Length: 317
Image (cartoon, rainbow, N blue to C red; front, side):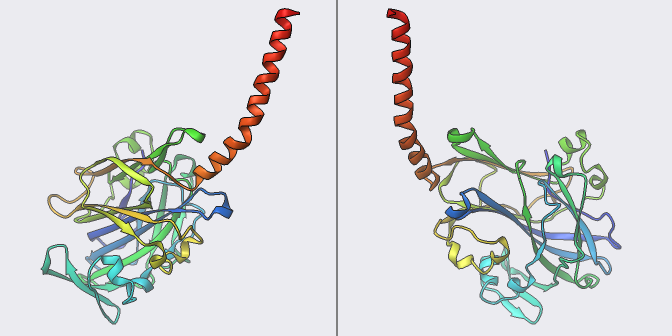
């Protein structure tokens, strides 16, 4: 199985990941695009570097070699969207964001926001068939020593079958299984995948993991316990999701959050795994199924009658 991780391979200096905001978006396509889904992953990182840091690597559990990375620093510094991204009041001070951390006012956060360079950030080849990709992320400007820095960017996922796997096939699809593995390299190493990055994985002190999917996907089971589940209004996030191209804005989203904010950092010795079994309830594709059934039913009945007459003639004649 694939995994998500931050790697210091190729970096000029050591750095710590103080927090990781990882959001997996499942966007329903408009009806005129024959249904289906578009997948995007947003990655937000609070970094504290020991020196001047200008690049690092990430490992992703899906194929993204031909995808275009999008920098999201502009929306992070937008006073209208920052409160939505961080889920609380945010003050914008030049190129800094200031807000209360997970523990309230006792851990106030002030991060310098740095853009990611889409032109020079690149995916490394050879992993597309395996549902795995490795990216070198280049920063638009280097970090400052010991200063807390925040970056946020988006990468579309072409076919995230390791993360989002359908239950059933064709008309029998009744839901999906979601599987996130953070710094969990065991099975990947046994399959010879991303072994070059395994020894360079950077521990993640705090993790905020989000699944955003159409609300007709209803959780049956999840592990570990969720921090919260709530509705999300798609139209409010239209500007934020601009780089994800068109999606069905009339469909409500549900957002589910897992959180790791205490205990040992997430690393190879202490990986994080999040699992969810989702049942699909009423969705717009049901109209297509009903329409196909209405059209096919008379044809099927006629065919059965014709076969029955043929068999009867064969028996009595």
